[in-house]
Amino acid sequence: MEGGYARRAGHRPRRGAAAGPWRRLWGRLWGRLWGRLTAVLGGRARTRVIVILACVLALDSADKGTVGALAPELRRDLGITETQVGALVAVSSLSGAVAALFVGLLTDRVHRVRLLTAGITLWALAMSLGALAGSFPALLLSRVLLGAVTATAGPVLASLVGDYFPVAERGRIYGFILAGEMLGAGFGLIVVGDLGYLMSWRFSFWILALLAIGLTWAVGRGLAEPARGGASRMEPESRLLRPRTGGAEAGGAEPGGPRPGDLARRSIRRRGIAPEPSLVLREDPARMPMWRAVIYTLRIPTNRVMIIASAVGYFFFAGLRTFAVEFIGGHYGLNKVAVSGLVPIVGVGALLGVLSGGRLADRLMRRGHPAARVVVPAAAYVAATALFLPAMTTTSLAAAIPLYTAAAFALAAANPPLDAARLDVMHFLLWGRAESARTTVRMAAEAGAPVAFGFVADMFSGVAGQAGGLEYAFLIMLAPLGANGVILLRARRTYARDVATAVASEERAR
Image (tube, rainbow, N blue to C red; front, side, top):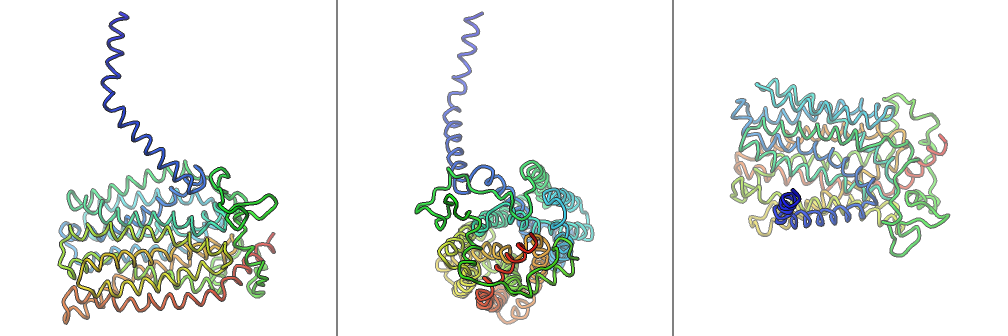
């Protein structure tokens, strides 16, 4: 018995000997990758929160990219037109724009993690209804519902980021979270879209619905409701955050010195910048009606400029996302497979941009440039315009690829510092409603972008052809994108004062 057992027991290691080294190699690689990520993000708890929030944006972006990628299959299966495909995108954004205002009010008053969990659950339901749709009206109705529930993401994520992470890190942290938006767009365009092409567009919808169910579980189990006002902010683990030069200005915290999260606002105080007396709140913002809260947020000059800048940036990005594949294929004579191969290259540029923009702005703020979170996006929009212009006019693909990649880097780099700056200039009990106003304008711009780009392209297609019409459309829409950067520079004069006003309002409330 013992000998037989020994032979059987000895047989198992030999059977797993070939797989053992591979498992150990994979375990070491994964351990090093996860260890490096947690070191960069400041600990396991912070990493878990950032990854979950990034996945929320990734799912939203994947859904938006999927509809465009599945347009041929939708037309063939349901017998719909190009205009109806555009309507599927537009109604989703429009319903989200309306719903965002109500979500913002809820964000400032209820348990945010539960609100986000409920929103993603309804998200999965709406995707399932879309997969079961047998006609265009049924699919359109599912997209209306989907747009309404996806509006939950913007206000809730903004409020949670403000209460989870220190002020001085918000730009960098937002970069990691918005990376999910870039990865999700690529996933929806390439992976989910190709699955729909190979199998069925319904299969792609089911995939997204299943991902939403998994994300619901992750949010419910992985996120804890933070205290409002930053009392429970997650500081980086001291053993992982070791400043190179020491001191508060390096991003660390000295005994008795300022916490890292206080650096941004203390730099405003050191300069002696006074708040705007007429904007200092003299009532409890938690009890302000929705209409009065929105009006107050729009009275803040920096916030107004940033809302416009964000809407214009996403307007151009929505047009690019809708027509880029068609334009590049026609302009350079490439088929769909070749164009899909170029998407990851340009996507890497966008991913690096979203990871770099917030980090650069935060670093400049620590070095004594309090308005860096509005100056960096302004420069990024101007640079993106300057790079897109030659990329869209050249007929050389070899010259266009690096230009498009660099332009995507600049366009994506503008978003993290802008998102962080909007939190800086607002009382923490108004973050949800302020973000809902911004989300409403942004989603309205996204809804109008395909129509506006398509209208301009149709105007010139009779003279220059389909690809030429799209080229004219993109070139014309570059004008507001460049002007966007110039207008945003005006906010550098008001940003510091509006931050001081937000601090004064919070201190008065305490």
